Length: 396
Ligand code: FES
Ligand SMILES: [Fe+2]
Image 1 (cartoon, rainbow, N blue to C red):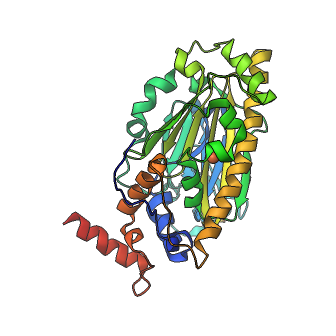
Image 2 (cartoon, rainbow, N blue to C red):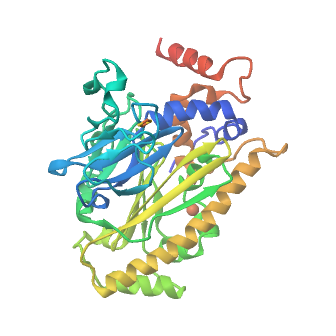
């Protein structure tokens, strides 16, 4: 733990409520960083797809011939309509645009155009769907809307490869009905601020505290990733669901995990917005992205192994109960955090050494978007231009 005089004040209040900054974040963070779409086993058949919508970008992943998974912008090359309108589903034979009926093959190439002769000498071999960058890591599919300096997922998450391999995540599948979505009256960074520290567990999360409150550790955000581990308490738990959960998990080791992992919940974070939780009986994930400077969409889900004993299923049910309570508790704190910065009395945070992860995450943000270093919003300039100038100065 760090015992020095680091700046404990956190990001300035304006960064949680500025519409110009929201635009800059959309560009620099959400378009230029990998975004989670789904698990490979959500795409079961040839033609199965799943869409993603984020900061005015629309994309989808689809399984084509030879089971190859590709990603495209969800944007018809005729007049820009969505070519896929549902969140998920299966395309039969082709992707057909609902506007005028252009159709595309699963590799994105144009398959058919109604009244083709009416397009003069348009070269349709050049009119395929625009591909998106895609990467699959241990069964999780990520896409990126714009190229950037961010490394590949396999490089970013390399330090977790060893631990994750015990869980055989690529063979897991989504739990039916487990995907949840909530809209919060909050800036998306308030979600991260609450999530990036475990100091609040004792007070705000009675069930989590009962599960691993005695031995929880947040490692700081380093190079865009973080790791936290909560090892189950040694003294008996008090709440019946936690007690029952621990009894089952501590008397089983379905995956033959090393002892520490078999009694811990581990969280991996990837900048800017993705978290994976490894539990002995299942894996959970959640992420958020902004709809505006003070509206955020948060979503998540649960992955399980195909074959599950009755006890394992009960354990997953119980951990789900604990997680649902925790998420509700956190969402309230998140909304209060954004509310706070609007108050005339708000003059910044006073972070503890136990909240160092919040600071290191903010440092990462300040590096990519240097205008966040200013105590008040630099409104005399276009925020975008000013930020580019600061970035250029930082390079020289
Ligand atoms: S916009 Fe898709 S066919 Fe016209
Ligand atoms: Fe929390």
